[in-house]
Length: 71
Image 1: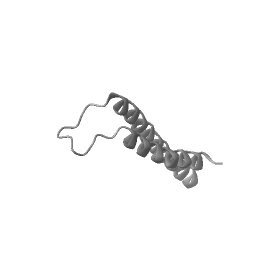
Image 2: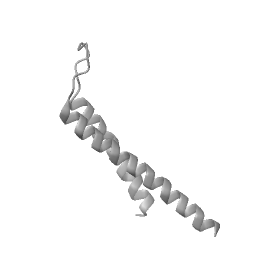
Image 3: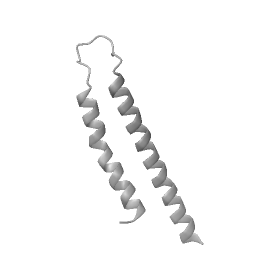
């Protein structure tokens, strides 16, 4: 498996994890204010940071491959 496919697979796998975190820590709709949910906030922010790194790595890999093919 190439690096690009590995990163794409990991990014694809992160999406259901994001959904599970949101569902497990959801605040009821009838709540007037959004409550602070530390477990969700920590887990979600870590996942979001990981997803951003994956996207950045994919972009860098694409840029490197494009530069190498032009040379």
